[in-house]
Amino acid sequence: MTRFILIVLALILPVINFSAQTADVSPKSADIPAMDEFTAGKSKIKIYFIGHGSLRIDIDKKVIQIDPVKRYTDYSKQPKADYILITHEHSDHFEADTIGLLSKASTKIILNQSVFDKFKKGNVLKNGQIYEDKILKIEAVPAYNTTPDRNKFHPKDRDNGYILSLGDKRIYIAGDTEEIPEMANFKNIDIAFLPINQPYTMTPEQAAKAADAIKPKILYPYHFGDTDLTLLKNLMSEKKDIDLRIRNLK
View 1 (tube, rainbow, N blue to C red):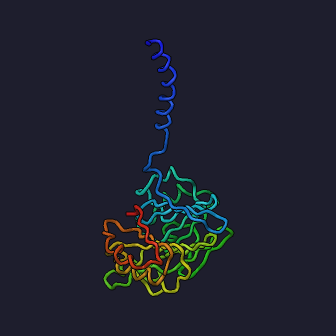
View 2: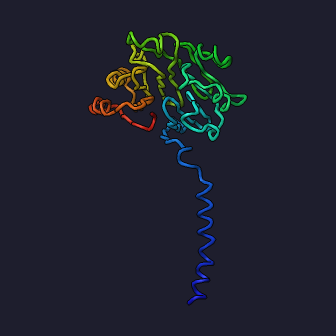
């Protein structure tokens, strides 16, 4: 019996050791942001929810980083970006060294004038201007505060939101903005990211009104910090044509 036990242990111990080694070298879950996947014509889109205003979108092995800031993830473990989009100059959206870390020689950096003035390179898009190549189309759209005592945070005509056309999908990244009249002109939006964070961006009520204007198929609130999203859920509960999806984007 003793000899039999020794033989069994000799057979299973290598398997146990191998499993332990595999677990040790596996990526930690904190380094892998949650992700949703979509079909866009013949392409696949993956949206990674990094945190706050930081997002990553992959399409056919091309990587798009949006407002990358290292406090939300370890970007040294992220692939180099083919495109980097910066909405505005605030430190929770623009970080020069993280842009440098993610850049390669061919990286296209899209930003507004105020960020260019600080970073000194990239392609400036003003509200209403478009960048387009074979992979994607990027429309810069307005992002600003409308409440009088808040317009000091995001004045009109300075910052950008972006509408990305990827395959047959249109994705709206609002940046820091309140509900604004221009949203009624954003047509055929499949996916929208709307910020909810007072006093800098929208209230839940404003976000619901913005969703009514934009009519996205899918709505992701983002940049919401400690905001209780229960009110938004209640306001959106009767809007059966909009799929509200809440991810960890504090």
